[in-house]
Image (cartoon, rainbow, N blue to C red; front, side, top):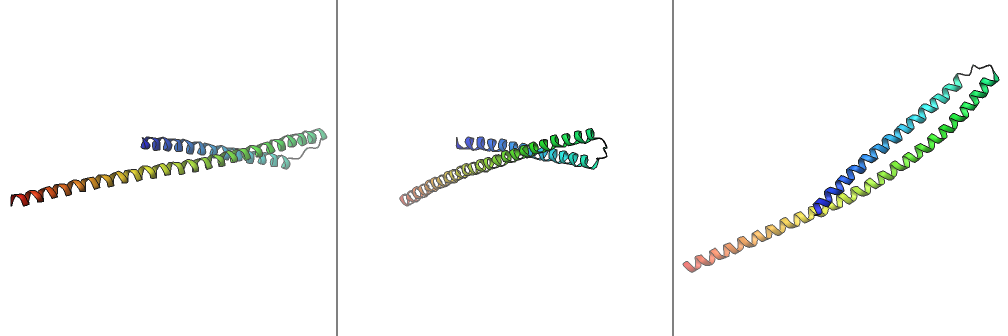
Length: 139
């Protein structure tokens, strides 16, 4: 029964670790998106060859929109990192719980082995005693 529970907890841990991996991937993707956005914003500064005021206004408006997107992306990265850290803590907690159950199962197994060994030793002692008594009676 306890071994089955241990296996269920191991499965749960594996699922949690898979989710943590997905969260790490998501966090990495969000960081890459921010880098690409920053590169695009930086490339806009280098391409300022506009002579018209309308073009400069459009560029300014576009940069403001992209700066807002950059800020939103930074917030998204922060949330993603928080999710990742929260999942990591949950995985560590689950891992500790699973290891504790494994320790209990192992201790019970060792205890059962010792009990069996003690029982076998008692049976052997009993057989030796009976054989000795029989030998003395036959003498």
